[in-house]
Amino acid sequence: MLNEALGRALAHRRVVRGRSCCTLGWEEPPGALDAVLWPVAASAAELLVSGDDLARVRVCGLYEDGECGWLFVDQTRSHTRRWCSMKDCGNRAKARRHYHRVRGEAP
Ligand SMILES: [Zn+2]
Image (cartoon, rainbow, N blue to C red):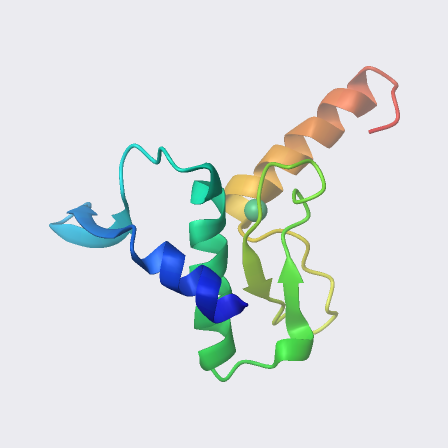
């Protein structure tokens, strides 16, 4: 199943302009309905072959809000990492908690 998803995803892999020159990206604009799954399939496959401890593989905490589907390896000693990236999803979640706290609401 992952290989099928990976095969479909890789058909949409493109070399795109990056900061310095080029980087691997995705077909633009993604017209297909399953476009959101392409990076998920690629990320899952990369994790599986990375040699990292699969028991520590987590899905980003913003997955339940439908905002992020990235997987990551929790390498913290306490095993409490919740976000794929603190710079992006972690900050978004923090800002949301602050907003609800200030308004006196449950997040
Ligand atoms: Zn995320």
